[in-house]
Length: 276
Ligand code: PXL
Image (cartoon, rainbow, N blue to C red):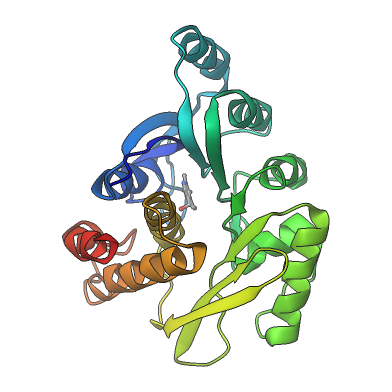
């Protein structure tokens, strides 16, 4: 059994079932020691709530890193998600360069956009900085919108396989190593994930639920990282994460009061069974 020590850097949205409140339980359920570094603390996430608080933790990062280095703390993997500021990205890049063990894997979810638009907190300068982080990582897990922002490609609501092939090629040209492109849908009832290492394009297709659910990108990325670090291939980890995420959405969709995230907790046993 592989037991990895990993660091995940993303925000704490105290309420809202996304980022660290999702990543920590999922990665723990996968059986990994999960260390955290909050990029920011928010009262809720920023999608659908108004008047949320936001405390950026960028200033704390140099001292946290220095302490870890003094204690000789090193990680098998680092997985980054929603970050707190443009300036913070330089520190996160430094973590990828200096806090890894000899054998080390980095995963960057460039969590900054969806549905053709940047999230409210981000701007063009953040996108430029995110490019430098994303293209230094072993794995990136963008959705189509994020892939477009990372490459300058035109965002399209409807597309074909040639468009996706073009997007993947642009990511490789820009420096991406392995790409897990989420939300790639070629039919009304199906959607899926493209797994691309610069040479081979594999596609994992699964049923599509006709509703956008918040936080599912974080559920997906966390499950992918957990499964991959368990020794699954990128394609198998992509499939395991997809089946788990679909179950979480199906388990939530009929509860109108639960609009802000998905009930991922009751499905953790299913996720763990898939890893066994
Ligand atoms: O799930 C991505 C995410 C994470 N954290 C915060 C967010 C969002 C998406 O909107 O607002 C604070």
